[in-house]
Every structure is written in C-alpha cells, then in structure tokens.
Image (tube, rainbow, N blue to C red; front, top):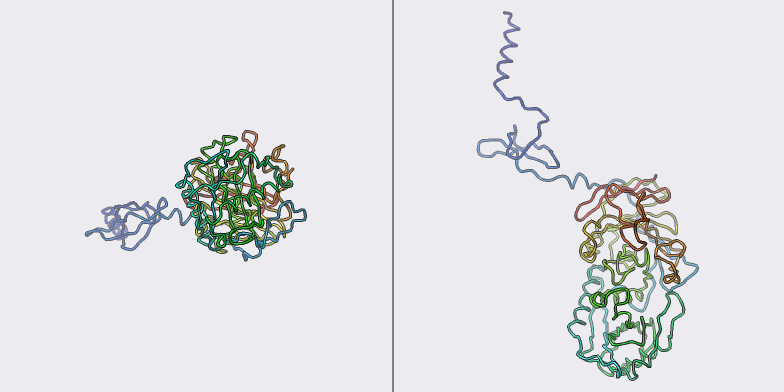
Length: 464
C-alpha cells in the first residue's frame, strides 16, 4: 500500500470519529456550538454561543424579526415644504384648511378655562342636576386634549352647581334645524338665548377667566339641533366680552339616527369638535360622516383626530412627520406609528404633489380612542388634500355621502386598488383601510403596506 493511500485512509478514519456539522446548520436553544461569542440568525432570532457548565451551547436567542423587517429606506425633505399654504378662493367657512393656522377665538395651545352652564326652563324643569356626569364629561375632554396635543393644551372648568333658569319658557326660543354651510337659522334667537342665560347666571361664574361657554340643556325642545356662536359679544357680570358658545338642541338628547345613550356617553366628543372649529379647524374632511375620528363623526366609533389637523395645530413634532416631495426622487420605506398612540408617539407621512396638493399617510389601530373599531380594522389610511378647496356641505341631506368629488372638500380618503366598493356602504371605514400587501395608487404615486406590528407599519412609497 502506498504512503499516500495510507495517509488518506488515516485522515478519513480520524474524521469519521467526529460528528459532521454543516456550516449552515440551524442554531437552536441548547444546541451545541463551537466557539463562545459566535452568533447565528435563524427563524427571526439571533442566537449567541455561550459557555454553560463545561459545554458550548446556543442561548435562547433574541428576536430580530422586527428590526430587520422595519428599516427605513430613502431620504425625506424639510417638513416646512409640506406645510401647504391655504389657497381657497371660494371660502364657504371661515377656517383655513392649510397653513398658517390663523388666530381664532380659542387659542390652539395653552391653559384654557371652559364654563359649563346647566340650563332649564320654567315649562321644562331640569330636576336633579347630574353633577357627576358633567364632571366625567369634562374630565374626558381634558384627557383628550392633553393626549393629542402632547400636553400643549390643558383645560380647566367652571361647572354650574345648580340649574340656571332661562328667563323665558322653552317654547319662546324657536331654532329649527339648520343646513350646513347655509346662512344661520334664527341667529337672533340663538344670540338672545345665550345672552338671557348669561344674564340669568348672575355671579355664578368668573367670566374674566374664559371665553368658552357650553350650555347643557337636556330638557330643551324648541332648539331642534344646535345653538351656537363664534366671537359673539355677550354682556356679563364682568362686562362685555367675545365668546364661543354652543348648546345641544333636542337632537342631542333623543334617539334620532343615534341612540340617546350613545349621545349621552359621547357628549364630550361633540363639545371638543365644536371647540376645534373655534381653534381654526375646518374639520368635516376627509370622508365626512365616516367614523375615522371626531373630526368627521362626533358620536362615532373612533374619536381620534386626523394627522393633517394635528400637524396644522402644532400638536405633533416635526420629527414625527415624514415629508416627501414628488418633484424629487421618491423611493422610500417609512415607519409610521398609529395616531391612536397620541401625538408624542404617532408618526405619519406627507407626500407633496405640488404647491396645493398632497397625500397624507397615517397608521391606524383599533385601540384607545378607536377601540370600538373591529379587531381587524387596522392598517393605513391615505387621503388627498387640496388647500384650494373648501368644504361644500350643502348636499349632506341631498346625496352627499361625505367623500364624493361632486361636492368639493379639502380632503378625500382614497380606497385601496381593486377593492370592491359596491359591497360597502359609502360611510364604512372598510372602504378605505389599507392592509398588508395591498396598494393605493394615485397619479404616479404607489403606496404599499409591507408589514405591520402592534405599534407600527412599514409603508413603501414609489413612483409607479
């Protein structure tokens, strides 16, 4: 036998006395490894070789799936370029829909004092005052403002401890149902009623502290839907002063359209909606009437607020806004975080299409202020804004379903590609939720939801 053959057989015999381990063998917890400190990534976990007793074994591993599947790609531009300037020519309501946020009767930030006046009438007495209910509703208002403003707004309240009896009977104040964006109905009656109530309250409230009045009128019948005013001068025990005021009519206490119990539970959300109007927000878009937040449905299943309005109010930091410009190269993967997590955590994206239009991409979850959504209603909402348009709400009782281009709005929700809208009602949020691996295409922009975790989404934005 040759020396070379003997040497080969010796090596073969020696090697057969050791187990053969593939260089690509999958690591598993407790399995043997060869050198302390080595790492191996298997099935979304990173395993490290450690010394256990006298053996070298793989540890339990650390999940790496989230970090590897949620990585941003591409560059963003200065957030200032996504602050589209208000450019409405036909102004149907007084509030800007773009930047800058105009000054209004109620500041957008700071400590705000709110007066709540319980009102009854000689022909409709109030009975026992629901003090605990009013405290609960106002506490919820403050919690909402602090959560979505990142503590930039704090509310304090003066709540009446007894009914203020209006000087006239309920039947003497007649305010029929109004039509949105039309001249006010019985404006003189509304202003006279507000003045009568303030006068009747005498010295119960410190009007120097506040210019925000809510009238709680559960027994009212003559006011059908709402009574309100913005920047209206009222004479008080502390002198004349401009006020925002609002009071719910009979609709807000009966079973029309929505159960009275639901309206009672969410009265705080309606009050916030009305306050926001006097903090310079147009609201009522995108998809007015759809339950995506209290900006479009005050008694709905979501009582959050849309990202664009958070941006305009200055309640969300620039670092939490990803700004892209269509005129530059777009090939991005963006990590977004749900607005239901609040302004300190939420992150959304804006794609500037031109000087007037943009696409807004926001992450949503059925939790917190959207906890009444179904568990599967999670993903992305995409809407197009146009700061040249105002809200035409004149067709709300004659065919306008809130998202129809036949009625101008400052924003419209976009539906996922290939979604069958015929099987869904016009107000269903299911029409608009973008789920994993689905796309929305608008003009030359393609938006795809690549991956979702509990508290974040990975969105791909490309030019199609």
